Image (cartoon, rainbow, N blue to C red; front, side, top):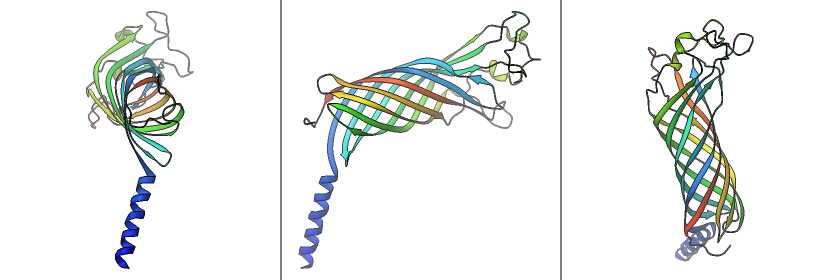
Length: 247
């Protein structure tokens, strides 16, 4: 009797396991592009507007399982993303600071171009091969600074220091000290799939950098100098192979 009960329980567990998780081995590759909005978390604070740029890259996605109604996948990308900051140079009345030498409002922007690799765990709900699917994804992201560029309309030696509400100016002359960047990224979006055409994806994603671009000891200028980045992007993927043929 005991052996029979154990056998029944084992068969029930195996049956439940088979019903809960449906195996997948689907691979898709493609490309992505989007609009990138960035600012920096500086301590001490630097007043800013959003830095804007275009990000481009490649995407690979492996779908491994359907668990209940959730479609589970892993996704990796290699992207080039121009991040940085654009200073909002204002006076104590929140008016633009005028440079005495040029007679123009002072403008300063730093663009730091990164090669980024996000590694994402993805959950989707909806149609797999033909129709719409909503998804969320999150994971770590790693980046490396490939170069930086400064754009400004005044000479640093002749900047208007007197009228600035924000007197923090060290960042204007400091190059990136820590080229390796890392943090957490998460996003949500909508995908339309067609078995003969491929996958069309739109997504909004947020990245919070855990690393700084400058050293942050007590002797250094900044206690924090990390990225905060929003990307609105579109992705196209084409199936390389699929294990599930029915919709």
